Length: 379
Image (cartoon, rainbow, N blue to C red; front, top):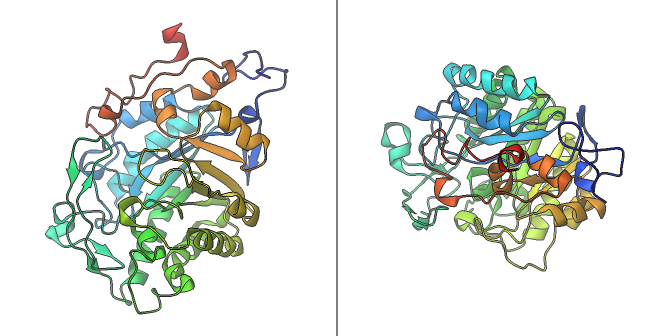
C-alpha cells in the first residue's frame, strides 16, 4: 500500500496511504492529512515569539500541509506558563510575521491557536500580581507538570462577573484580528484541556448561577459567544476550534461528555466553522493514552465541517481512522515534534525518532526544538 518516494513528501503514482491523500479544507487545498498539532514550547521571551521559531515551524512545513501554531495568549491575563507567546500587542504581531512568512514560503497553511488559560495560572504570571480569572473561584490543586519533574502551583482564581465576560470575548475577537494581520491563514480557538473556555463548559468546574452557568446551554454560552465574535470578525472560513469533552485535564471534567460534545458541534454548525479539532477520549490525562469505550464518532457524524482528531495516533491507526471515514485529518504532536519530516517518513514507512519529554519545555532555542534529525541525516 505504500507508494514509492518522490517529491517533497514522497507520494508516487501508486496509491498513497490514506494519510497522504489530498483533502480540501474549506478554501485550502491540502496535499496530505497529517496536521502539526499545537504544541506549547515555552521559548517566547517576554511572551514575544522569537526568531528561532522560524526554523522550528519551517522545518515541519510541507507544501499543502496544515500547521497549527502553539497556544497563543489573547491578553495579558491569558498566560499560565512562562515564555509562551501572545498576540495582543503590536510587537507580538510583528514578531509572528517572519514565522508565518517562512511557513508560507514553503507552501504551508498556518493557523494560530488562541487561548486564555483561566485559572490554570498564578499571580506571578498575571499583570500586577492579580488573581487569575475563571468561571469560578474554586482553586486548582497543585499539579505535576508534563515533564514529570516540576509541580505547578496555582493561585485561587477570581470569578468573572457577568458584565466582564463580554470583555474577554472581545479579547478573543481582537486576537483573531491580530492573527490575520500577522499573516496567519486562520485561527483555532482553544476550547480544550481545562483552560478558560473548557472551564465554563465543564460542570465539574462551572458553579455559576447566572446565564453562564447551570444548564448545558448556559455553560456553552461563553465559548459560543467567542466563536460568534471571531466568525463575525474574520469569517467562518478562517476559524477552527479545539475541544476535549472527554478529558479532565486541570480538573475540568464533565458528568456527561457525550452530551457536551454533541451540543457543541451541533451549535458550531450554525456558524459554518471550517474545522472542529477534537481530542480522543483515550487522552483523559496529559500525555497518557488509556483504553476508553467512548468515541468521537457521534460528534464526527454531527459536525458538518472538516473533522480533525488528535490523541496518541501513530501511522497505522492514523491511516485506519482516515480509511474508515472516522475523521478527515489527523493531528500529530509529540511524534511530529521529534520528526520534522513526518509525512515523508510515513510515506516511506521509515523509522521514527523518539521524542525527548525532558526538553519539551526548556527555554533552549535549539535543544529539543530545532535539532531533531531529518531522514537524510539518519540514512
